[in-house]
Amino acid sequence: MPTLVRGVSKQGFTLLELLVVIVVLSIAAGLIVVRGTPGDSNYLESDAKKLSQLLRIAQQESLLKSKDIRFLASDKGYTFEEFTGSRWVPVTTEPLLRPRLWDNGPFQVTLLNEGLENKFLTLESQAGLKRQTIVLERNQAQVVLESQASGIFRVGQAQAVIKQTSNRTPQNP
View 1 (cartoon, rainbow, N blue to C red):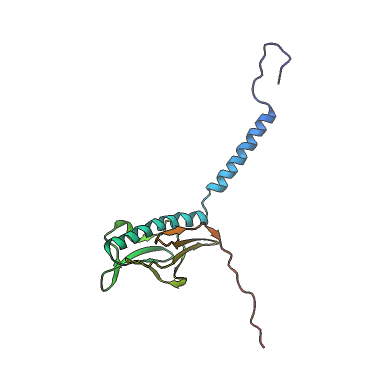
View 2 (cartoon, one colour):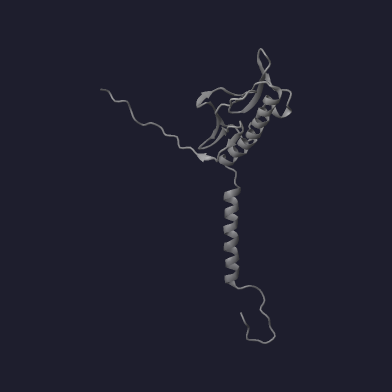
């Protein structure tokens, strides 16, 4: 804003300029808080991506050493086991496949083999890969890992889960 006095320069900012800066910073801070706040979806995706990489390592271990490896999961953690000829034991030859706790758990875990719920998934050393799915769920969010034709598990986007409860009562004929 020009001044009426010669030789005197404008010092500082106008009130409007300060308000614009404050509004812009407030909007930016709001976006950072919303996007940067960890929620169930973020936790699920983080653990699902890590699990996807470990499943890839287990698949490679199975193919390279011609042995079956299975994946077992609970709400607290998961483990990889190999078949030794007479029984299943935890994998000890690959340190990355040691038993683990979920980083951000606990989660509800569902394992599906060819669409049917199962207690474990087998990563076989032979060709003929099966369609396998792992569903991680926490509160109202879930992430699905699905095996591809190559045996690699793809992590889907976290989605909100709406659980329907049936309020209908059976009717007597």
